Length: 509
Image 1 (cartoon, helix red, strand yellow):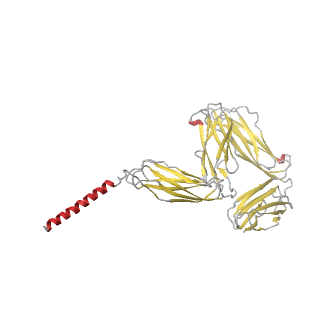
Image 2 (cartoon, one colour):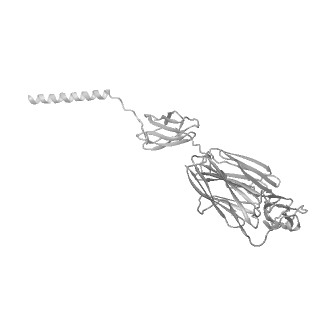
Image 3 (cartoon, helix red, strand yellow):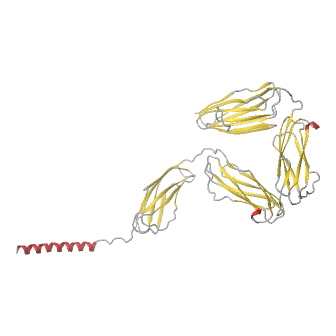
């Protein structure tokens, strides 16, 4: 009897447990099918300091941490004080896979200074949104002055002689390398082409957006002869960067008849007339003959010439195309080139004679001469070239933007005329490579600014041949900049005597 009661009690307990369990299953919420979830490597992004007008980008790594594929992903951003850009390419993301999401903050130049807060919400398909907090500190833009220049590796392009036509043999491409040698990012660059003559030219700014300091881009410049009559092409490519001055690249080419072989040649590519005394007599003149030969298979129908001289030179030169009409293959002509000293002060002459034939490339002949005093002293040099200062201390400056001017007097205490002086500026007082070098001769001048570690020095001088007992003045204008000490050197090398060192120093606190 006791055993029967025990069995019944156990059955009642089991039945009660079973009923209770069934009731619990009936009331439970069904699980969501294919629910996805994402995981980010950062829960917050601090852009830290961003200057007015600048931008900064941070990469978020997003991983599909669920067992279902994410088919889409949306983003929403809220922040004050600037613009947040979230741009990414999305394709279905399998479980365990990851993608990078760039988050970029851009501050306008007019954005008020201060700290800004915001948030980024990323929401996957069939999943819960994930929030990332954002913060940024907008600081004042760098107002340092621009230092350095935007430069190109060539200021002139001669495409040479190309046969008329539109095939590859009638085209030539040259690369111009542009480098940002400033301390600022180049944000803009435009180009303009102006041309005259035959043929056509094209320049392309390939994918330009901006150019950081020290970086370069290549600009292809392409000339095409086209189906035009033979002739010459002249043009300019003007590149205008957002920093600095426009840069002009001169362009030239010659379109020739098809199937030309050989070239037009001269027997000399330079002429040194030597030293001639000032005056207009025969002793002050010298003539040299240039022989030009047509080594092509075509008759030369045209030939022009142009003389150009360097600024501040003395004397004069002339060239004559004597009775030229045409020149058959294999024939030559003589071109007299004559230099005259004239009644000018002693000095040097530099120039170029450019001969442009109707076939082939222009031919350049370099010209040089020296004009001496009609009563030039011969024999050994006596005396010295001296300066009134062996050292210059500009002093101590309390802040940037302060200036001081010092003049150095150089005197010719020799018995001969000084025809040139060379100025070498060194950023260190010890011997080393010159940061700038310029030679003054004839009637010439210079005004050049040199950077130091604590400011800048503007070097200026007007020079003409210096007779015995005469003076020339060299000005040094120092402007204070960053704090620090400067110890440099100016080396003056006259055409007579030994180099003269002038030590330079300054301090900015």
